[in-house]
Image 1: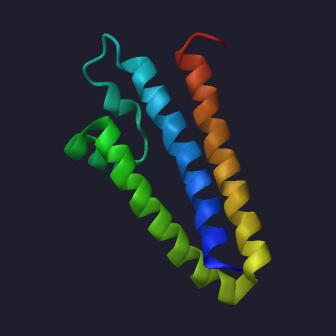
Image 2: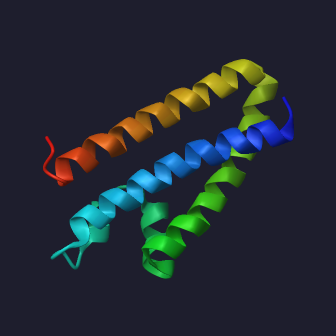
Length: 110
């Protein structure tokens, strides 16, 4: 699989996750000085605390894309490129669905 195509796929997946996370945290930020406690990922929370919500999201997004490449090439040798990519799609589908659920819940839609 070509590097540019993988990069595009990973950037889209990570951007969707990070945008939903930012939107979610921004929705609960009003009137809540401890809004970062809603983030369950300790690594993401650390980046948000050190660099702010926007800066932490950007930096953690870059780290996540790099981590995805390492994971992809590691698992590709075991499972093959197609199965590894499908696994990534499934994981990010679950993560984005979870973020969307909590966004709808925190904004009062559901």
